[in-house]
Length: 447
Ligand SMILES: [Zn+2]
Ligand SMILES: [Zn+2]
Image (cartoon, rainbow, N blue to C red; front, side):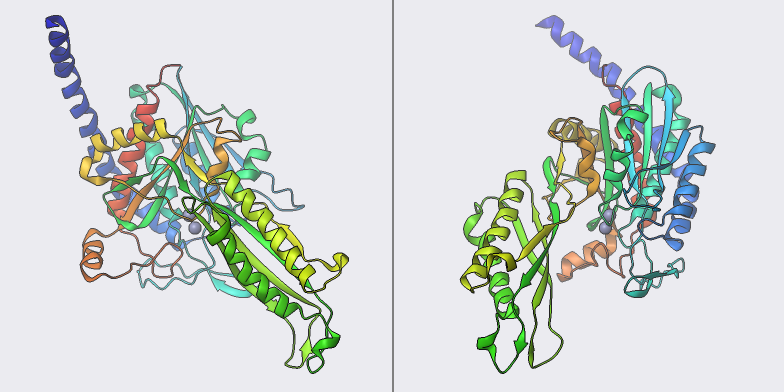
């Protein structure tokens, strides 16, 4: 008993100054890099590129990492679409024996015309299927990339303080949910050192800069797009009895789909079924042949996801049958490549929370609720959660603005908003320290 007490006092005496010392150079180094970080951020912010088109962005990230001594491989990823190039990149820094830690950033911007009025606001325009659009880093992936490069810089400056393999992953096409699978399909975990951990951050438009947010377990939802073509038999609007009206049938389907959430799913399980698009017909007095619905569905548990999908099929076919549509004209229900829910490994997430509390202070580490948004970061754990992964939130709102909004009960611009304007300086100073400390800690994992 007495011996134990002596040991614990000695441990404290040894560990306490070490912990304090570990933090001081981190703060100092982050401050030293701040001007560079801000300049890099503004560059990315002013020069966003859409999903699948991240050519210059990826080249800049690759260039910075090469200068830091990373071995960089570009054009990693296979979209399975002829002629489409992936701008995914993987940068490896081998620094002795130890764990392999991966850090991921995404690279793409969004078809949003920026309305922040910032001096470095994006003026980039691009052609898309629907016409011309402004392009903006409205999801803050510019913040992610800068944070990622800042972390790389600090870790290369501190190479004597960690041992292991650091892999930095620059992922394209996150906003279309295609980049992660494209990179995994291209042998991500066989061509490069297989990860012991994969971590990432995402900026948060509802948290003040200076804070981070964590959630163990389900943190973001799965997202699936469903297309339903409701087929009827068209004709004159004045003679409905000679037709099978797909608009009336599709309307019944839209309403009945809402009973999945309210009547078929356990109320304790989160789920969303949204019909975001309903198109049919050309003119007032013509009953068309078909109606087209586009849905997004969200959930956390894979079994809930499956249940929703099968219920959509059953309801669509059942109501068509009730309307007298012959079986060969039953609605077609097509599911596109979805994104699974993001599950933050509990042990890894708790470990990160401990690191962040030490580096940022307990008050700046917030335990957040899960959200129904989705992230294709979820793919990196692989089927059956083989690899521990965790994504944390990085507060992005200027603290004074956040406080004012809280007091006045105002809603702040969300991610993807044309008005989203992060407090980059504070968010980067926080994010770079948090991510660097996280990697340093994970590199201490016994092999
Ligand atoms: Zn986004
Ligand atoms: Zn995003």
